Length: 288
Image (cartoon, rainbow, N blue to C red; front, side, top):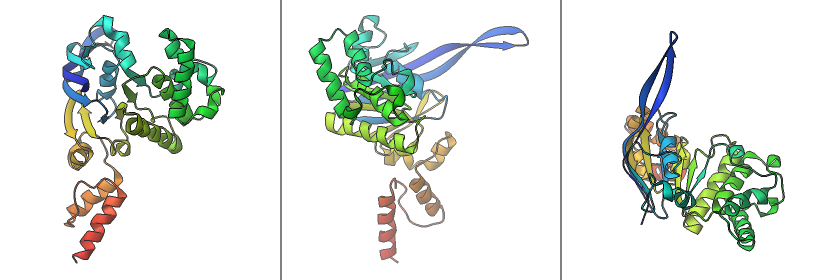
């Protein structure tokens, strides 16, 4: 089943520019005929430098933006259909970059209950959903805490729990670790992978951290509103020169493999992890 399907998706917006006292309007294309397909249960990473259009794409999945061209479907629901907006947002929950912008209550469990309450869910079911969501993100002991007392990584996990309480089939995360320290990043990414692996929730991760995309099922690279690369992480990250041309880095160990190959050392181009590098070097040594 297709969880998300974008066909010739385009988005144009008007930018106001003032120069020498004269105000003019410019049309800018944030997305240009984008085709992306995400299967149910997949973990998909979308990469791109700042301003590439990847966050604009994310906002279309949650119907925060409406296409100016083409179509995007969530579980075969057309996001241009205003009557389906709330069904779409319940199916595809959104987690933003700054958790402080997503937390609305003064107590953790009340914040998680906010979404289900707005849906008119019965109190007993809300209680169950809150408890289940806290358990899923490993934050049960913080149920009665004030969000402001939590670390950045903990706040982001609570934001994810708030989405989980809505019972989504898909979670879209728009650079969820950009404002976190390494510990917070690890906490959030471990949570996201566990939800995908154990709960079967479809994950669409928007990021510019290459190491976060290494464990994805598939990777899309967006540049200047176009999808320029897509495939498995091994297929995408082996294109080191192309990625650098799009203003992106590659995982450090992939960079090392690339440099070794340039020196004539026969190392595979699709190495993504330290373990793979160690195995390749051991195999190379045994042939010397």
